[in-house]
Length: 255
Length: 186
Image 1 (cartoon, rainbow over the protein chains, first blue to last red):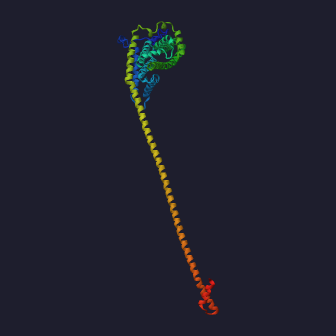
Image 2: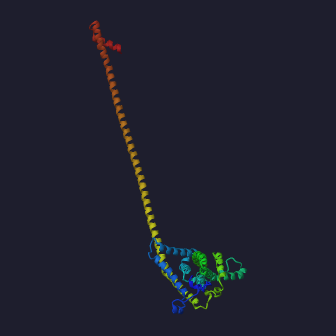
Image 3: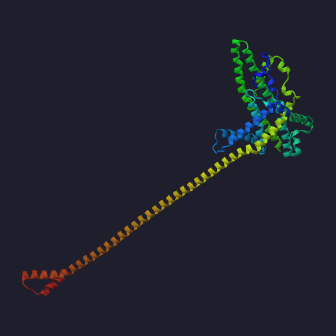
């Protein structure tokens, strides 16, 4: 995302140009509405699948490094799903695994220069959040029937409080996909805008002559630190998304 | 979590950036862009395929390897536990056999000792009996000798007296001397 093309006209920094969608594969991509965002989704999915395939190919009893990494990622998400959701966690484990690694791979791919971060698009993150929302509602109906609606009135509440509490619970329930999607989207956008802006500073300072060349080191140093921070934020946001998914699913399957 | 420093860093350059970037609006919110909706549809397709590939192929493969490992470790542990139990049993058997053997040996030694003691006692008793018999025989013989000696005493005394009398006063009536001796010694 630190492509030189996004620094427009030298004197201004186009921090948001990196989020623009462009069709790939020429006219075919245009006709299919295929931009670089789905392209990177494909790459991310392929990387995860290849990682699991190549990692598990030896199927050794004593794993090598790559196999150990594949097994650790499996165990990590499996423990997360089972410990959070409960005994039905294994049912939802592939879904949680897909969510976690789809977001993680997207976040990390976006840190590579000239790549695209599909998790920086609210449409994508909201789509994921709505999917989690719908699946948790379907799971609620499947596991609890229509009775799951009684969660909107917490147990032991006096009936006269219901007109107040039910709307509050309803709003908090409906705001879940919004908070889930905006959290991820905002974190990704903020990180990438920052990287872009400081990269732009470097270029602008470099235009000021010898003194500027020395000063230009500072934003580069900041960008190095920001990249480290983004590596942390990338995995953290994927984890937060996955664990909130698990928490919503636990409420759905709990009796 | 990292909101405070990030927001600060975020706000600082935005304030410095001339209005153009902000005024242009975020491309993410340009919902007239067909590519924006296109990526959601594509995203759904790709995520669906990703989920299917994971749940049908990739993850069961990992699970199979993990399960195999668990069962193998479990069976190895079972074998090891069984071997240990057998070793324990064998060691216990060895111990009890040794204990038994020691008991037997002790009993054997005791029996031999008591036998030896008994035979020694029997031997001693036999010896004592033999000695007693011999003592009794000897006493009998002594008594007989004494009696013999005592019974021949009057005869000797008579003959001695006859000799003495014959030397002193000449030959006398032997019968009278014998009766005289008999009278004196009685």
